[in-house]
Image 1 (cartoon, rainbow, N blue to C red):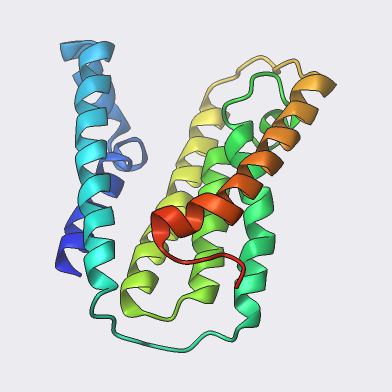
Image 2 (image 1 turned 90 degrees about the horizontal axis):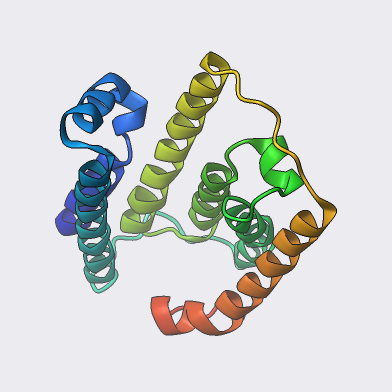
Length: 192
């Protein structure tokens, strides 16, 4: 579990710079350039995520159970992941009304994902893993909304086609992940 926690600290720590050290971040970008910052940030993030995922897998080999979730929670996760996938896609599809309305759908997607998985997992390692992401997403969303209030950006134009595409791509991604990739990548079937 220690390896997982180290990975989480690296990954979520690097993703928390905008929450706790925005001025320092801006100074580094001014000093080294945006491209250099993005390369360094990406490298640290990838390393942290890889370490966290490896540690997560190792933690599952010798789990410590805190509670046994009711079987029905797995159905709740499956249901909650549907809007999480749609919001994840909304972060990347330009001119969709979901992003225009919510502002930061990626962070909302992470909140739903983490909360849903806390409902259905009773191992200590799972609780630490998903709670860390949930806490990060709450703080990151709050910081992003504060930055939004400080800047007066022009309203983004939206199209029905972009919004419909967002929902359809989210649904397809959900089906592919739930029925095929979750078992292959995570080792746990969504529907069993």
